[in-house]
Image 1 (cartoon, one colour):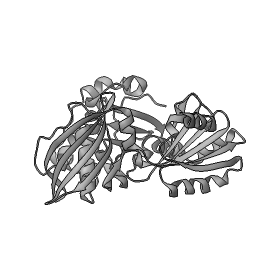
Image 2 (spheres, rainbow, N blue to C red):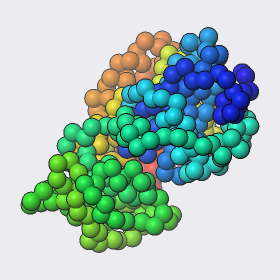
Image 3 (cartoon, one colour):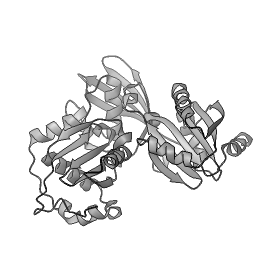
Image 4 (cartoon, one colour):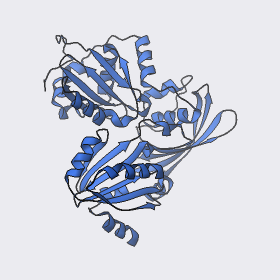
Length: 366
């Protein structure tokens, strides 16, 4: 693929069109930029990693463009919104200012380092406001507002200011962390009490806050209490029922066939197999009074190197739909399905075991 530095001042091949996902309140966006001969696809993280995903694809290879977009930003649960060239460059520079840690991984980005570092962008307030409106969802209820707000504040993400009616200078942590779960209880006079579990300095912290809402904006916020927890205590808070089914894989080509036909799944390789994660098409889980970080996951598919497929979901409806969908694969033989009181799939994936039933036997002994 062409190793062209599109950020050089003498580069004449201007952007034909560009898009951003409306997922900025999740802390990440996908950006797609079309040029005459190629398409650049970015994954931007505004919490910690900056530009942490990049692909360049030949403009003529329509299938690969679709697959790369799905692979890079398909799991964000948002829609692409058109932006102009100024807004595109503004986003790239903003993400670059967060971190450049991933630049060396991508040769094309590495070649552009100095140009992005010195990128001079002329963008007015109206363009920034328009960009934020495209990147940020119109919030539908107070629960969604509060979950997004706490999520962004805990991540030390300045976009949280957009959710305030006025600057209230609210801080929960000095460094960015992740909101794992949030429980909201409605009080009087548009006040809400929240119990938030976050990962915190190699352990966990439970934070109680009080927030006041007016016209879908935060007008007051205060921390009431902070409590450090061990991993066992955090696990009890995070525990949910998990629905699991296992298959025998009669032909190893089935995994490749599955991946080819399900281009929106995110693939990760582990010592004993390959994990495919399917995300929901939206982020409606943020609208609930109880928010879980991983509730954006529709289902998990883990192909082990011992001819086994393990699928899981936190919703019974989803696992039933997945089982029905997998009936089309003739070389998959369903062994059984069951429910567990706590999540096991990730413990299995990161364990030394490549057979789920051997792993399950060990769990029961423990």
